[in-house]
Image (cartoon, rainbow, N blue to C red; front, side):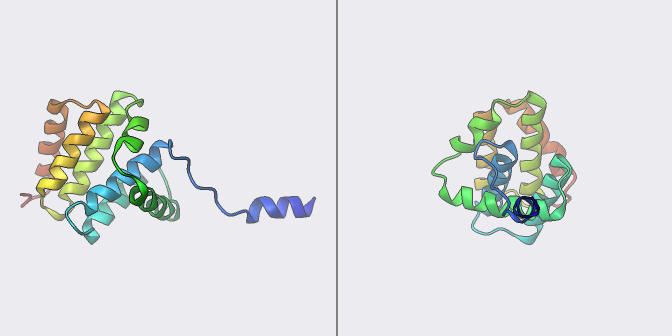
Length: 148
């Protein structure tokens, strides 16, 4: 009996399934942060903050999620693997995902055209309107003085 309990508590953590929305969001955020060639410290911090606040995760859980997301992102050939999961969420949740994406974009006070394009494509794929995407972009840009 003690051996069985021991196995339960010493078992390595299982990876999230590929259709888990948390993993999909994290993978998109990781990809977004590095789409312009490098992930800056500010962008990584924005990812961590977004995941902690949105999913109420502790720092260790967020670190594991980001590592797993980076692996999934490296394996992905397109965004469909991630967006197909997210398009089934309620509209409020999808809008929040786009808001998280904009917070990563503006974390370094710059909006690179590749970042902007990625947010546009993901918004289209998950059914967030151009109007909502633009409103979010403008609202979050205002919170980042000097954002280009």
